[in-house]
Amino acid sequence: MIAELDAISLYEQMAAATDNENIKIILLDVVKEEKTHVGEFQTLLLKEDKQQVEELEKGKEEVEEILE
Image (tube, rainbow, N blue to C red):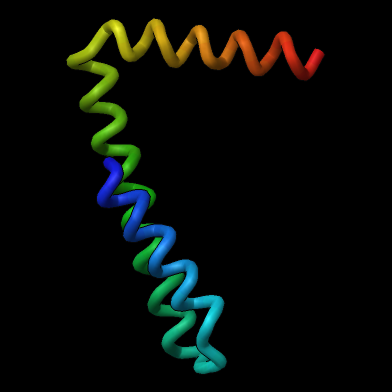
């Protein structure tokens, strides 16, 4: 997942750095694909690691408490 997130960051930076609209379009399309990969890995992680599910819920609750 870290590699996918790194790729998203890299491709977004590259898209922001170019004035070539064709290159920008392709890079941002690749970003969407990488985000799909993150979703796939996250889904697998949550199916296989119940502790991760619990910790994500705790994090969600903490954010909701802070933002109330």
